[in-house]
Image 1: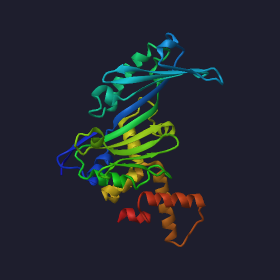
Image 2: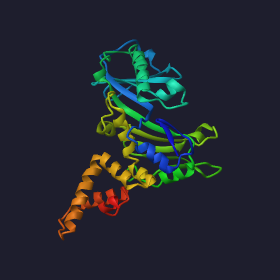
Image 3: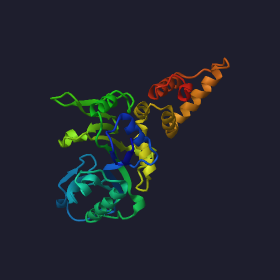
Image 4: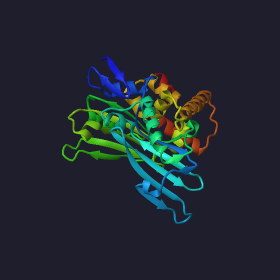
Length: 316
């Protein structure tokens, strides 16, 4: 089958199998879609009165003001927020896919940047001192990829529900109340990180078989991949998107070559691969250096994640 993939919306000349999905998501040229962006910036003072804000509150402990409001933008909206505390900052939040296309397709990062310009133009009417690009910091990012015409959506979501992209977290699985087929699977961490897959067609009621994979990144995960900067690259976004799906993609691809590539794209996994290979090499010579319980645990988790018993399994 020839895949005509144009991420973040993928089209094929035949229904997508799990292997096809893995091939697209592991491709070096993957461009992920942007389904939500939140950008934070400092400001010197607010423009206009408090009546400009839909919600306005005061922290009784330190008397800081904070407020929020929504304004129309394109086919969607931009949400504004400010915190007038010791560290003054404002935020703009928007869904570029909705603003530009009404949600009919995902926006690329380049397209999202055009929306950001418009959103900041709106913010200029509320804040002063927020016009330096280097001061803009991304604090929330939803990365998504859609697959149209999936062969077996229920199997894809069932597979998704039995792997663990967020350590120690069980998924929230939502089935169709009539058919029992899974409609969405969501993993959430205490830090608001979220990894999910859902039947987009069921949500829209369009009778199709579109599956969306989505990762919500915040805080440390954004910093880890360099995505807190608006100058981040498509490759950085694709790597962040893939990392938590790596075990599932390796399983779907059925390829140890693909599995090795996934390991080498993840620095922590690469370090563990080197350590595990060293231990196996020494073991072949009858040397068994002591390791900590914590290392044993991490090694066990590494092997479980990538479904190998030994490093040699990667070269069978």
